[in-house]
Image 1 (cartoon, helix red, strand yellow):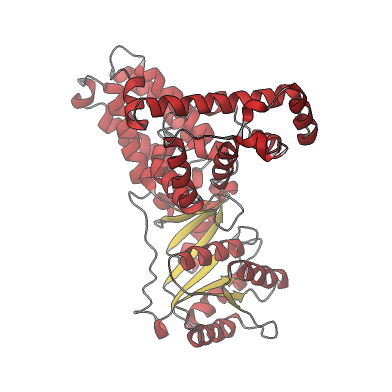
Image 2: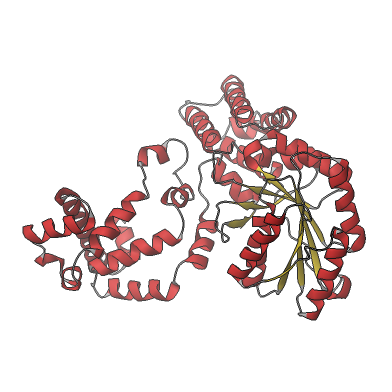
Length: 447
């Protein structure tokens, strides 16, 4: 997501930072590079043109040209303009069940076939359930039995009730009956999975209108595949014109999507991106924060989202227990293994590193990150006896050969993992000797 755009913008900003002073000429050159980077990222031409014009207007002002840190000022301007283009702030979902019919907020999920509607319905249900709500999933796709089966499988996996009726061929009636089922089971949110098509046609639009006529909607969400680039914006424009929607969901944002749809959608259609799908698992759903996304695009990281992921996915009790052990100078290979398993819960290592400041541009490529390294480390440690894990110093040559055979690795790989462990243990001792992490940081910075 945005990887190439981030690289191009990073290179452009580095060139600006290398200038003795900023002039209208070198700003003009930088803006040309920014415009090309945006177009290569599949941003709508008119949107890219307007964004660059806004940046130019602010960047050539005397406050910037006379600044002690002009390059930093330009970065801030670009960041502010990207944030504004993406919506400025996170767009809230309207799920006020008190104002809804029968006290049940209803969400209609729309989109073309293959965009990820059904999976998104499951992700949204899981998210709302974790927030303390009681969702009901409704299978309103009367054409594709596999979609009904898929929704039932998803509902079972997250323990959420699903309503379907394979005997009815009227989607509006199915949704009406779903509302009754939601009321009977004290659900407060109903998520309606509608039918999709390979392309937009009158039958699809008429059916969506019929569903909305049968049951009033709190939210109409349009699911778009980010991989199809500007075509997603075209699809959104047609849906907006024919049936309207309140917000977009961009799926497959973890893939090779160039990101142009996210940057163009609000400006072209007037509808914000509300959430993004960042993986295939049901927990891989994020609220779309324009300021955080702008920061990621500029390679400035996204620590707030990283912290939220850690709080949701990591075992905080285990993390606290490990922190206590570290403070007492205890760090065994068992602790090392637990650390790796906690990290894996956060998703891919590359995905985590992307959220760290300074890891934009070419830095991530240079880091040469490979999640398979985790698998090797786990295999090596799990091939050790309990005694070896708790007292690694007893691991001699013959033990290393046995561990290598048991883990499907080589002795040199076992040696490398043991060295990584010893380096981390040494660092833990230095931190404790310095009086804790804060004091260690001050010493490292020469404070």
